Structure formats: C-alpha cells, structure tokens
Image (tube, rainbow, N blue to C red; front, top):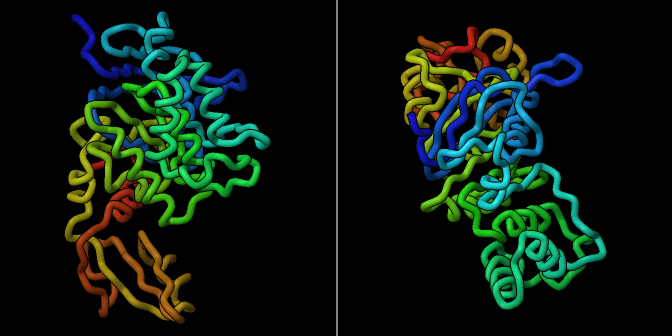
Length: 303
C-alpha cells in the first residue's frame, strides 16, 4: 500500500545509549495546517522533532514524507524542511541581514533570488528596524524572529518549531505564534511546546505527549481537535475566588488547573464532576484546563 502524501510517522521510538527511552511507539499522520505537540519537560517533544528533521535516527519505526522513506532518503525531506530549534546559535557580531544572507547561501539561494527572499522575510517577521544591528544586542523576541526567518528561507513545505515562546513574554508569544500560523496555509507546520496557549489559536489538531508516550484517546486516536479536548472537561470546570492564604489548601483538596492572582485574592479553575465548594461557579473550559486534566491523568489514555 502506498504511503499517504504529507507526513506519516509509524511506531517511532528512540532509545539513547544510556538505555533511557526518549520516545516510544509514536504514530500519526498529518497533511496540512498546524499540528501542536504539547507536553511537559521530558515528554519527548524535542526528541521527536530531531528525528523528524533527520538530525538523529530512530531506534525503530519509520518516517515517510510525501510517500518516501525519510530515514533512507533524508535529502528528499531536507530539501523542503524548515527547522527552528529551541536555542538557535547566531553570530553576535553579524547583523540579522548578514546572518540571513549567509544561511540563504547555505540553503542554495543565489543572487537576486536570495536578496529578494531575505528582504521579504525581514519585513514579514518584523525586523525592518533592526536588521542592520548586530545580533549580540538583540532581546529574545528579535532572536526568535531571526530564527523563524532562517527557517522560512527555502519556503519549506514542512516547518518544525521547537518551543516557539522560549524567552518571550505572553504578548510576544502570541505575536510570534501568529507569524507561524500565517505560514501554515497549504503547508504543514508542527509546533512543539509545553504551553498549550502557544497552539490554541492556530492548531487544527493536538498530540499530547507525556514521558515519551502519546496520550491516546479512548478510541485509540493519537491526535485530537482542540474541541475534542474541551469536550473532555465540559461541565467539570469551576471558578473559585479565594484569599491567597487558602491556595495551598485548595490545591491539596482539589484539582486546580489554573491560578490567576488578583490583588490579594486568587481566582482558581477547579476541575471536579460536582461543585467543589459552596461558592464555586461553573464556567466554560479553556484549553489550558483540558490540557492540565489530561496530562495529569493515569493511565495514559484520555477519555
């Protein structure tokens, strides 16, 4: 049977020389739009991305890109790949424009094509006012924008982004993820993060990872739509306002999915099948509520 177009991952696993498993038996298929890989530190997100971009080889399992085996023919995938790692090394004495020209040359862009592509991306990612400055003085948000620009130089059909919000505040994270979402039309984007808020506005589907395993749904699916996650906790999320000194007690007695501190008081979201305390008010669930609920459940399957 022919492999489907797009990306097909089957029973992908990675075991390190120490004997530890970075990822086990992961399978999914994705063809277009943004797929979010979400999980805590150590879940296997970076290991998965590094295998997808052929930096490391899987212990077993397969990766097919547009019907071809990427482990046997990595060049086929790399030609259409853009990758933004969590920590991108840059030359502090070079300007963003110089760095992007250098990276474009490494990717085979020449002459007018290279100049046009660099100019276009500098404008698209919001670097027009700072492209001439040395990157050693860049704050985190500008460095991430440079990183995204270099990942987009070859107009990749497959874009992999590891921890898009690294070093950014909430407003910067939102703007940066919107840039990534803009690239997703007619392309495939995989975005790995430990903060579900990074993917909530732009992801069409989400894969949850925990301890190197995919959290499968009750019917065996490795990925689900954001609306499916929300449905898991609908009718179970309660808003409670307490004094700051009651926070520890509430966390001990109840499943607290979010905390919002407000001038001496704390607004909590508590997940419970019934009203947890007398003054709790039912509220619509957020994706953060659903993620917290799923990631802390045992066994691995989510219902």
